[in-house]
Length: 450
Ligand code: S3P
Image (cartoon, rainbow, N blue to C red; front, side, top):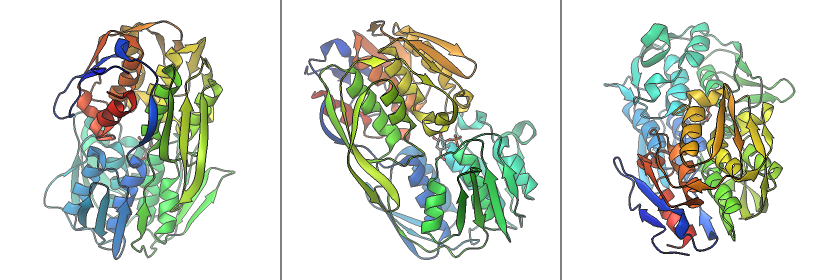
């Protein structure tokens, strides 16, 4: 494999271009790699560790910018969170209901999970005042989806544009339990309401139109809460006022980060790559099902259960891909992987149709418009649908100047596309990758052998 395939990549700090030259790839991607800890589980371990009594130790935590935002918010409210090394933290919890009123504005940064889950916790801490903001992307993302149900529980929350957008101000209240029928399958909405339910007298239930990731349910149980799940009706019930006790949490590798390498291995000829220690919770494995529909050669090896979450090593080998349809209940189980699945579709024979994914428009960027524009700039054929996209595969890609729009998953998806593009691709604002994957570039260099 060619040296210099990656031309400018050393560290992703402020406003860095990632420059890749796909024509210089001499062979397939190979080796055994590890990916950082799961972002969703990392956030939850920090929050529950802070709310529990006693000490929580988290192994394999993602120390990307998003979980760092969560840690900073909960430190400001009294939890002691100590980084023991690059992947381990110790949290001295303060006990449910004991959050201190922070002296300053809480900053969720770029992280929707931090803001939405934390709102459930803040709104249910009576007699305290909190203000919460985020970066320019987060301040455009809809918060009414959690503010409305919390208000029905008795919460007092103010925000911009008639209580829809951050910055937000919250006066904590004694909330009432409720049964919320969520119009969207969103783990952030579900988790927000369940976390608020912890501080109510009685049972709080969330029913979703399709099952979203269940990390909150698993971890709440592990910390001692009573959580009942009815898979038939897609409902989850939490019983208020549990005793949460500090735990040892082992965070598996993030399948959303593994997805970049799975697609890379599938599209780059000659590849044989193993991604070790990947969380394969069934509420997250839609990407494996979609790639299987496309004919990708991916095998699950060494399947095991680690601290309540299923884990496996994923081996991917290059092969011919064919188009498929991705729609319906699978969408919440692969929502974050759609940008990189669009890249896979650009190398698959036929037209891949992605539908029922309107949620993509309110992620860190409008991922439908942004991915379509950037992939088309590289020579792909992608057309936008109101709730998804159509990607006709098989056109040769060429290098181009593209932009992450400060969205981490866009930056990394474009890097994977660039591996198979002829000529030089410059990805502007590629530092966004460090939101969820601070070591992305190092691993990229490792798999291409530069
Ligand atoms: C997440 C839920 C998903 C996902 C996000 C993380 C979580 O968002 O896109 O990256 O940790 O609960 P929605 O709940 O908005 O679908």
